[in-house]
Length: 554
Image (cartoon, rainbow, N blue to C red; front, side, top):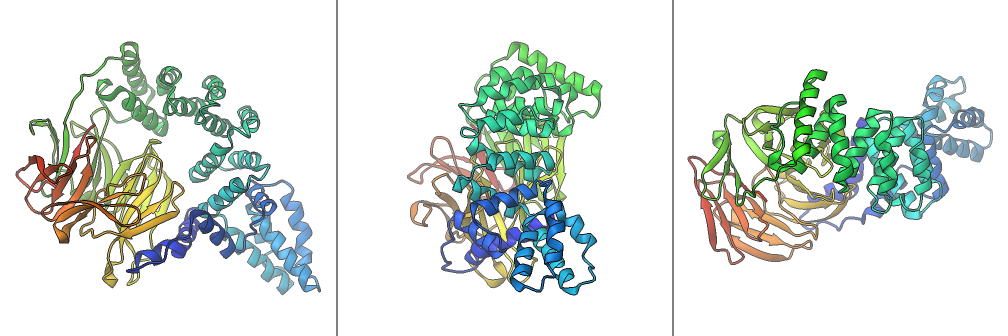
């Protein structure tokens, strides 16, 4: 689904985003639901409930589809034009399950039939993307079409693609209450993938969470560890902690990454020292024992207040400061770190722009995890344990194995009409904010908001002068903009109205602290400073080189 997904997603963005980003006064984006309808209409996909449900079922591989396709093939050569047209439409609706039959008949002796078969193949292949599947699922849920939950479960049985499974889970979540019976039946499915998808959906539903717990005793490890995580992320640590630790010994790289990441989130600074996930059973047994010992005592750590994570870009240094600005530790020889995030357990996520990779390091500077990617601008851990990576061309969401889960492409190939991503930040809800610009055309940068399904939700001008790192924004659409050319940081609402501003020397980064103050860093050697709502400096830090990032830890 990946290649077609990219192109179709760009097509979707072209309807709303890319045109908006390139105009001084862009048209207002279509509402997200209308974006879905416009995408489906542009691909000539029927929008009625029965048509959409049929498409979803065919995507899952309807066993009746092949027989239906064999019936339709002769009608493609009918003397009646309307019959030929209807057969073409019906054939394209049968989905990926009939592609092999169409390939076998693509050189049919009847030129009319051959042409229509090719058209049907192209239509099916074009509409297999994640963008289209997501639009179909959301339209079905919005219309409350009966049978949607069952079709999604069937699709989970037939697809192991991570991006498709994510779409299925997001589609099933709003149906957990009304279609609980379908999900409970799915928990008894012979396919482990269907069982864990159903269990994770129920675990995420407050009133259904207990229904997922029996899967902690499932015979398949792939089910047990995912259900343990789903329960833990839903807040049930009592059930999740012992189950998660129990699964460590069998965990592959993906399971080990996600389980330990969540365990470190719970343990904070009291857990075992972070290490690369071991590739052998003996190493996994040692890791499991360390977590068992932690679980037996659950030590409480003393609060560590007013720590500040700083980045000295030119020196390749990441440094954690205490409240007196004294280094607690530092990482050296990092290749142009444009972004850094502190993760619980003494781990640091880094976008190493100069090394073409994103890493997670320990505070001893040991690489625990890495993902190769060309010139990353930002890296962020998401609420579901994945890593969000931003480059000038795209946003990638990858899992613990580095496998791609989602991709958003902001523009086509680099040319005089291309859009460049400059900064990004995902909210806990999954909503995404980007600063983008068409520099070749000399156009102003814009801050663009996307909903949790990565459909554009709005945009405003943003006078950002540098690329790399985060753009701080909030659930109500407010955004902090470091306006380098104006020597200030300004806060705007979702409509672009200025709410607050403070003077700052050529600012490149700004972030809001838990207390409501603002941390600002500069492109010059002015260092980092913290200002209150009145713009008064209440903290500052200067180092031996430019301080380009300063983030106050909770």
